[in-house]
Image 1 (cartoon, rainbow, N blue to C red):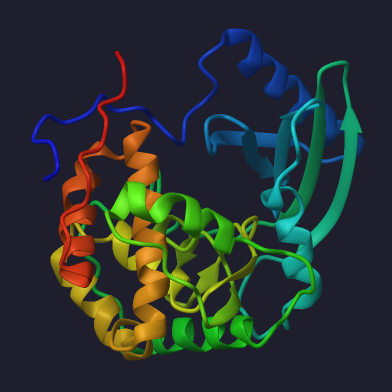
Image 2 (cartoon, rainbow, N blue to C red):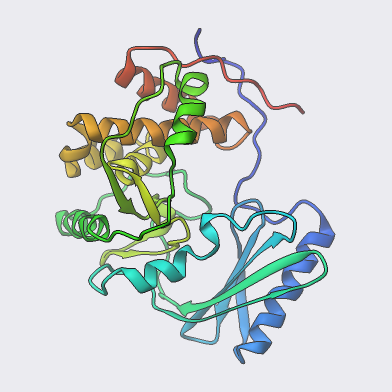
Amino acid sequence: MSVSTTPPQSKAVFAPPEATADRERMRRAHAGAAATLTVRAHGRETWMFKGRTLSRRAGEERWLRVVATPLDKPRGITWDGTARADTLLPRSVPRPRLHDVFEWTDPTHLYRAELSEHVPRPALQAGGPLLTRELDLPDSWWADLRGALAVSAATVPTHRQAVRQQWIDRHFSRLLGISTVPVTSWTTGHGDLHFGNLLGPPLVIIDWEGFGRMPSGFDAGLLHAYSLTMPATADRIRAAFPDVFCTQEGRVGELVALAQLLQVSERGGHPELAPHLARRAEQLTGVPVPLPPTPAR
């Protein structure tokens, strides 16, 4: 079967909560965290995945992020990823320093506040992970990114699993139309690598919530997948990571990244990216991806 030509209903992934009560609850939590940490929150609100995270400037040199999860739901790997990355990664990996962390609860939610260094430069992509313009970055920036990911790969946390073989076994057939693929090469990485989490030059990598173990090639594969609508930049990514895009281990990691984003598209996120993901997956497997369901209106 082929990909549907009818675009699914778009759902904003990086947006405030739909319910007014949830938006105000998060704003109260953020204001309370700022008061506890004796910083002044100001400037534009930055909402992350489905409004579960709210961040703002805190003073002149800090950035305050508050994340929430219902008390009856598991916290998930992203809960303490930033703190674990800050502890485990050497300072040679360019990222904001984490200054303070604390957690608290209200009757319905658990909250976590993280006070980090503010980097006074915008990300290379604003408004979300999908690349919307071609980028012209110097060779030195790409070399620094390769080096940072290589250092991350040499760091081995004992328990953080960003991508699991069980997920691959459960979803590859449905999303990619192929049998499951056993991952034989695992590494440690960022877990959410896209140009919305990259600054520069000089290079800075932000938002390490998804830090953990993953198939080799997953980070570069995800960066490439989010850039497929910009072919020149996608070409540059492939040239920068030949060890990913020209090896069997790297192709497995890229397939996992494509499958994850096809699942996001299936649920209504980034519908304009779906046909590009499907074409790239078919290039790698020789098999058309199954027909994705259209989200209900």
